[in-house]
Image 1 (cartoon, helix red, strand yellow):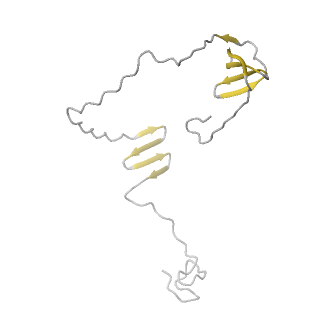
Image 2 (cartoon, rainbow, N blue to C red; image 1 turned 135 degrees about the vertical axis):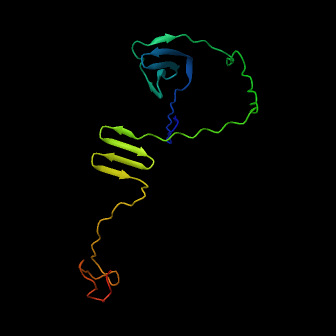
Image 3 (cartoon, rainbow, N blue to C red; image 1 turned 120 degrees about the vertical axis):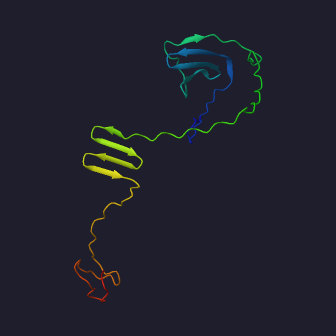
Length: 166
């Protein structure tokens, strides 16, 4: 058994032995039941959704369905006709019109615009691809870029190697 989208498969098999009579079909509240008459005794095959199980008891309330034996597989009443080839287009397709720019969206104290991409909510603001970069926090110098010795933010030269700290 395998379902679309699944990469796992499962299979079961069951041995019934030789059948002593044609099977009977029953309809139950949860699905269908097939009664098999075998040399080992009666067996019941339950089919419920995508589940198949085998047991030795008939479910209560199952109603027998009529079955008939056939020697050929029934065919559909009308054979399906082959599809006709598509006709070429008479005129070339027209290009689509460009979309109108989106208007700013507002919900409560939140506002969002698409060009440039911006979002405001209360006193918070988020901008994407803005022309002015966001201010960076002031850097505090902790180590010399030349020798790696720890330095203070106010130092102008490294006390270990004398490198000018800029």
